Amino acid sequence: MLEDIFSPPPAPEVSWVLIQCHGSATSAPNPICISADATVWELKKKIEENNNVTNLPAIKQDLVHEGMRLLGDLLPLRYYKITNNTSSYLHLYEKIQVTVYKDDLPVPITANDGMTVGHLRKMVLDVFHHYCSEHYALERLNGELLHNDVTLPAANIVDGTRLNLVFRLYI
Image (cartoon, rainbow, N blue to C red; front, side, top):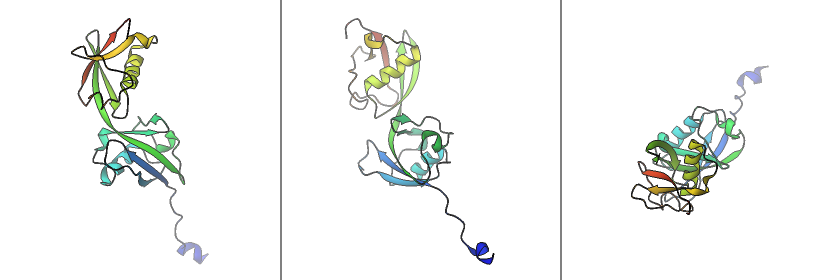
């Protein structure tokens, strides 16, 4: 049919991703239109290119959807249950590289500025397969004990911070 030749192609299926930036002056979520078949890295690049969202380069972005960190940059958004023709709400944090020492063994950990010291502690304990974790604490190299309920920025834990994982009988 002639009208089939001149009819517009179907609109591509897309998803609206609402990005909530943490640690920025902007509090309203920023919408980004992207296909669920796009990769996490492609979304991060789109966020980087959109000056209204953040000044963070893609490599420093840590995205969280429904409590799950989007760690696989090469995975499609669909893998994280972000589907076309829907809106998804993602949280954007800044990655923080922290080195934690246990018995002089350095362990690099990638955290983000939305985590607490307790979250970071759990990540470190998972690396060492410690399941009885109530006696382990994080402390600064000078011996200052860090409290689990404090956020990393409030504890002045920034990119490049070095900490110790220590065993304490009484915390």
